[in-house]
Length: 409
Image (cartoon, rainbow, N blue to C red; front, side):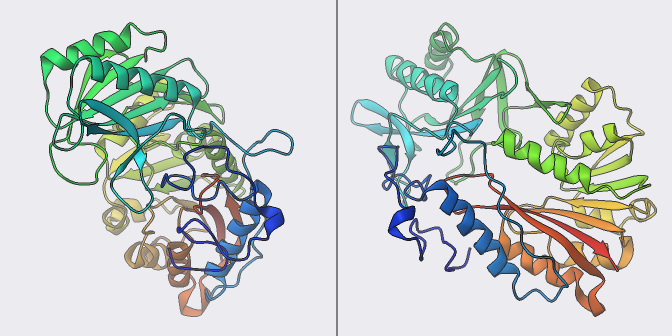
């Protein structure tokens, strides 16, 4: 993310008056690298995020609508959102004979021990401290040179369900079975307990092998009238309330008399499944086979036929180049690419080969969004921007989700 007056990742954006500064409620704010904007009043955070999106799109050569105000998270009256992260991630480290658990310090890979994290679900925090204590009692060494590396907890917002995945450098059955017994016997036991083996020295959260050791294999999440089954190591939006806002926006973007929707970077079907329930035929393209497996399981749970919602395991650019996808003649294309954006190849194929009547673009990086929109608006402006709406997926950070609707000229 480039530097701007609207904000940056350093934690103190320019142009924030003293009247918009507040005392951070978390005792670890400032040292922890997780929430850079806790010291900014929430209404000011929303204003800064809108400015960030507007600045990124200012030079895009596409006829554009004005950027709307940022849709914020539900908050107490006069307050700010807390406890909204349904996926919690903690890191372990060894300090002498003790295990510490926390997050990385700002700008480093050093673990900052924590005893609270107010942006996480309280249930996820409670379970994490139970796991930390169980690891200590079982004398499991921690850190990249030990055994215990991370803990990832997924909490359902709509059900009394929770999955916990302990990420380890190697499996040590005797000690790790004791940890599992302690955790599953606790008052905050998860409904599913997993072990992920991750021996490689890299920054990835998970390794290749995940083992279910107890309980359910997926957690159920309900939003926008649709049920989703989510595996412990699969991607699903951590802020479920904001995800529902995105789904409703996508549903509202379906053109009148539309028959077919192409959903690119579909993940586990966050948009594809409710679109199919709305009555259109959906082709959902996702390169991660595990995410597609979750999507197909959710499709069955919702009693949606494979003809109504078809999942395709492929990279977006490869799928777009196939004749079968081109012949789908999509009325609407939904784009939800990773932070790097869709890229020139995908955007050119959309513009020149697929040519949908409308594109609904969900972006998690304004600069990548601007680059992609510059491509789609080339050659005399094939598309115009009908609306731009920032959505606050990650309060107390500079990150902003943007929902853009583009209509073909």
